[in-house]
Amino acid sequence: MKILASWLFMMTVALVAWGDTSIYWLNPTHDFGAFKEDSGVVTCVFKGVNINKEPITIVSARATCGCTTPRYSYNAFAPGDTIEMRVSYDPSGRPGRFVKKVYVRNSHDENQAELAIKGVVIGNEATLKSRYRAEYGKLRMQNSFIDFGDMEKNKDKGIYVTAYNQTVDTIEPSLSNLPSYIQTSIIPNKIPPGEQATIAVHLLGRECDKWGPINEMIKLKPDNGEQAFEIPLIANIIPNFSRMTPGERMKAPKVVFESDRVNVGVVSRNGGKVSVEATLKNEGENVLEIYRVYTISEGVDVKVEKDKIKGGKSTKVMITIDPALYKGEVVNGEVIFVVNDPNNPQARLRFVGEME
Image 1 (cartoon, rainbow, N blue to C red):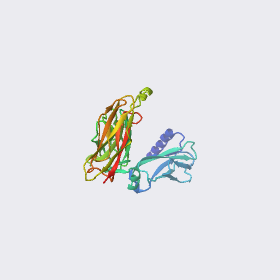
Image 2: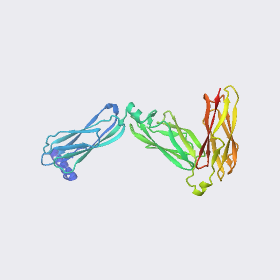
Image 3: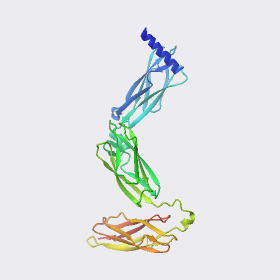
Image 4: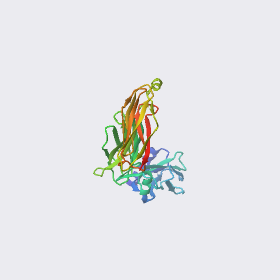
């Protein structure tokens, strides 16, 4: 009698709480926890009780995703009968946390009930490679480098990279070896098994004193006590002309080379260094400033006579090739000038020649 009284009391509470709902679902949410993708389809059973005074049937059960499949009996359930709803989830190609819902409609209620499944899928090797190409021990990332592209001086820019914990343990990654103009954060700082985090990397242009391409190596440690991995961070810092007025642009400096190609002639592999001169002229009105001059060609050194050139004036550019260090069967490269010419902030001068 006590058990019956307790059951009647719970049903009364349920009726009050659920209003006109005919099915009282004992636990409308199921958590699968963390499981491996290779485990295949997982299934749970939701149990409910017909708390109506009349028999009812399940009319429909609709999932929010094709990866989720509900199954149920089409038979009528008498008052007090237990109702079972089997819900399966297919984790194939779906690493990470998931929450899926199933909306259940019965023959008596106007409103539909909501059931939910959740969990975390630890992806297999094939799935993870397609989504997170770079592997760093316990952690995988979308890319093996962080590329800011062109960045105007004195401006800030953020890059957001998704990271994935491919283990069954919670990990706490960290970043180090950061230059002063780089700020980072990892959210969340502790990544549960099979879940993602966002690595935010901000380059503070106001703090960076470099011009042109920069290439830093920051260090990523996937977890405490783990080996640190190097990740290239690249950017190209160019002048910022966003605040120039039309009048200032009319008076702006203008880079013009005497020739857009410098011929260095024949360079002997066994000979000494070869140097050639080029001329850079400022055909604008205001002073031309050369912030940086460089080349990516190994064995090539570039120097300019002056880094500030008044309007209408020129400066000499000396290009020196060391055949012992130069790589390549022919001489073919570029000298890049980072300047305050708004129409040509990265002026390029090509040098060519023969290598024997």
